[in-house]
Length: 470
Ligand code: GBH
Image 1: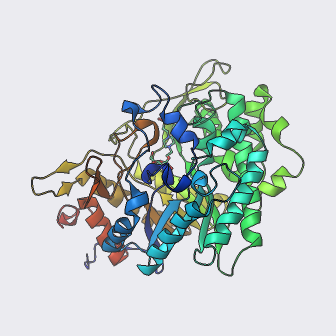
Image 2: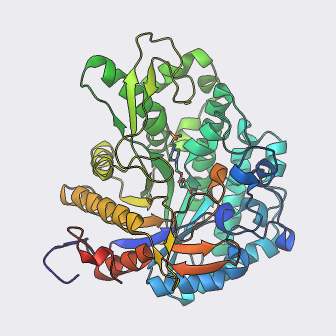
Image 3: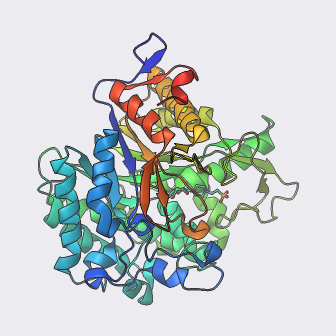
């Protein structure tokens, strides 16, 4: 890749890969771990495809050392993982040292291999004990989260520089309590808005807890999932449809953490549910808006919307309270998940963030694609589609940087094929193939390709032979 056709990233650009506790760990009963809402949800009939569960997942709980070895083989400078709250606090409140011990060992193993840990505290696996007390419907869960954040900082803060409070509160609130396709499986739009507010409050209280214990140089953040909106026609009605979706999907979570409160147009769009504003108590917006040291940007696909003739008709988008428009089917090349492949939307998103909050450094904290893997008789895992997806999206990131966006890093989703939530084990996102029968790991062609990109700090400018040769 030492030709003139490579697009170079800025010096110090952070490369890595990400996972999440429930998706990879397994070991759900090891060392006294308590149940999470995902253990409960998976046991319900018909919630997860094929009745799959995270009981074993990638067995990362037992194989973490081997997995860190794979990261070293790939040459990853950084690894983003999440902590299972019920592993370290089985009842959601009381510290359980054996559970903390797992993350102690993981962090030490990473540091031994020269890999920087990036810790996410909440990637959707709430202790079931707290759900039994109301979960994200109740404010107290936010206070419990702040205690948990303080505990984890106490345990790992001497070795971990980069911390994220929440991953994608959009999903945990709107899929968990709004559409009900994720744990705990509640389907109520008003409840989803309240859950979103309490998660943002947890972020704010968690940030305060982390900052009060901060060592010099530590950085605190969260990861939000963004979906840029596409319309077919540039007229008033289409712009209004796009505004509503963008408001509820993107600005609803970003503006409060930036200290700007909830967007007025979003509050107006959901006022008829009479749920969000009553949940906001005095001081909450100040707590939530504590500012960020950087922003984790998770991007997978854009969303296409179209206006409806009747503004009072509920939207098919499934987001709380939205009316008067529908989401259209994705177009063009799709991933096996059925998501649209649109690298230019990633450039647009990063440039929009740069204009919206120029003061905040951005890190792409998740980006990747589900495709089936083809395995040769010699065991080689060919996944040309995934390599191409990474190449195109990294060119999109490069283009945003060239146009001025302050993007400091990129973390591929995911290190390993893993438990893909409601889709069970049917969607593979890994740089490393996992055989879920034998737990054998095999670095995919896309993993080798990514490894060369980060070694060169550059992505090939076009789809040369480098995509397929290893
Ligand atoms: C991430 O969420 C998660 O952080 C990660 O755990 C997960 O494995 C990864 O994505 C891959 O799924 O409802 O059909 O209109 C991604 C956020 C939110 C992106 C839902 C797609 C819905 C498309 N996702 N969104 S749809």
